[in-house]
Amino acid sequence: METEKVKQRALTYSLLAHIRGKANLISGPIQVFIPLLKRTLSKLNESGTFSGKSVMEIKNLADSMYGLDFPVPVLRKILANIAAEINSDTDKRFLLFQDDAFQIKNFAFTEFEETIDIYKLERLCCMNTHPKVYKNK
Image (cartoon, rainbow, N blue to C red):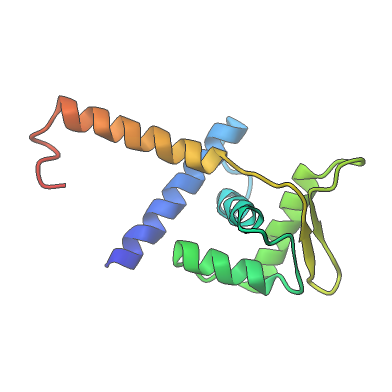
């Protein structure tokens, strides 16, 4: 039951982060997962992981963070989309290689955390304003 709540919450936050960042709805079925994987890359970078021999390292962390099972072909496509979005001709912050190895250079994704913080503040406000509604939560 708790795992299902984590999945629902992760998908909700991901959708909110995507809408907030793009100011429009999703343009494809994988778009909702992009913020989740950006956050995963950011967490890898924060923990000192700057490269890996396989995207499976990203998959394993993402799967454990969100309780989801990202199919590897879908993961590759999402990661390629992220690389295309964040890299420029002069600044390569996330590189994917043909052998599934990857390199992360100075990548931080804060939209997800900002969305979570906003949600928590809104909920706290509601809890203070309407304590009877949130009495048992």
